[in-house]
Image 1: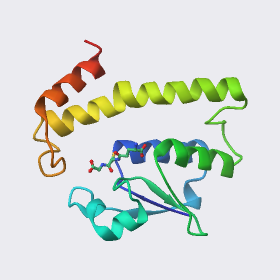
Image 2: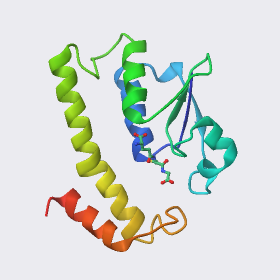
Image 3: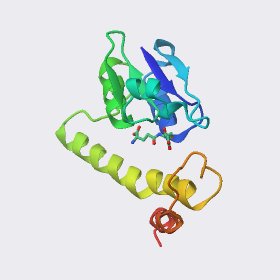
Image 4: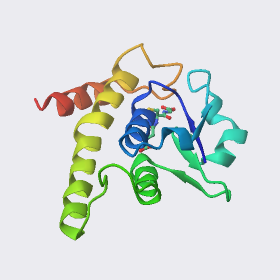
Length: 145
Ligand SMILES: N[C@@H](CCC(=O)N[C@@H](CS)C(=O)NCC(=O)O)C(=O)O
């Protein structure tokens, strides 16, 4: 299987951590995507992942799975070693699902939106629709103020 990603970016890191937990790093080849250069927005890449984002998992049968939670669910089911990442029963799965959404909306996406919208670091080259007020509000969400 292949993973289209960028080493060091936060969402790809979530999948790399999952692979490490399952001891499955060697089972995957990584295809680097030039996100800072806009490769993820090309028509060629959008045929791979219509979300125009990384990471994206591609299985040997051609199935493509984007969105970290979905990719990690696949990895968890595919590799038996290591801890369960998605829960052993419906109670654990429900708690993990809730915590994933909390971590995404309240932290990861909020921090990302702050940097994308309210700083020159990632925008305006990467974030082509910068909204500074929105970015500052997202900083408040992340810092819980
Ligand atoms: N919800 C997606 C988020 C993916 C995402 O936003 N990835 C970032 C890299 S960390 C990206 O590709 N950004 C492209 C952009 O901002 O245009 C997931 O869980 O995979």
